[in-house]
Image (cartoon, rainbow over all chains, first blue to last red; front, side, top):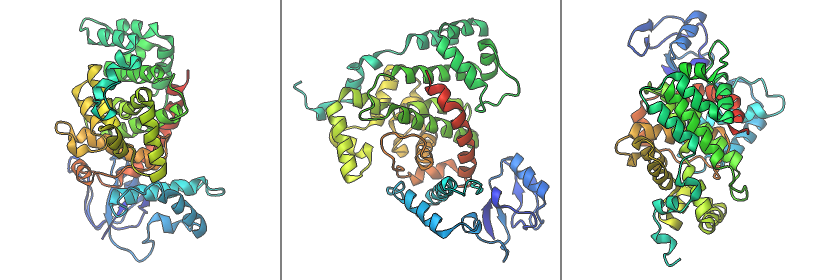
Length: 118
Length: 287
């Protein structure tokens, strides 16, 4: 099982846990394959993270998955490393902010305007 | 002066500053009419209309994507009925404070970038509060606008110490509020809290501003303070404006755990904030 973000969900992935809204009502039971309407439904309920079953296909996070030019990626990462010099880089909040910041930098590079950042 | 800077207290800076000794008159008038139980929305609108720049800004903001109402709002009375008096109050305070501090020279701190950072924190804090299901997320907007205001007061009242702080930071690359504590004995958060106190703003604001770099020190409002702390970190990561220090401040990990938020919240907040920031920042900072 792994937890992924809403925007990384793809139809056909299988839920590893029930998805519930904030009042505890089940939106979709575990084991069900995802359909496009489910993703829309989760979005409407403000669900941010979903536990899905591991699948051999498409198992990396979006940074490595978008077939980004490695040189551009390294360049972006260098630009933000100074920004985060006082941060504990192993903390999940900082890791997530660094991921978003790197994607944001990549988006500003020529020819990368259409990379989906979120 | 016979006293050394070390003996200074944050509140000494407030009483010595003409810019901060009193709130802008328009804000006091809005305060009075909002707090008067016999006032109608049109009474309040009449007071807001006295300040043409404020009423124009208010209409622009309520019609921006920040509120995203389905129809166009054309009168101040209508604007107040849809956003409520509390939000009007906060918006009026935010806009008047920004124009009140306009005369500060750009030499040491770029004011446009400073307010961009503050507005970034304000918008992120409001969005975080919504995700935490906090009541009245609008109050976080005001806390965000004001969180770094102590820096401006230090800059104006202690220019020599302020430039020493900037020089030290440029040289050694430390954290501004730590250097402030070394040089002055207190940091900009404490100065901002003293200002908030002398203006008679709610106690929660005083505590949030005072502890935004160390939310664990906030006794009565730990959640509120953590939201501003986190919004400050996020605004730095998003590189919205600059408070004079580009580095992301260290996260208070214990305080973060209190919020019980998933890390996935940041990508949602990032995209929400980008849109709202781009729509509102120029409206508030113009004119």
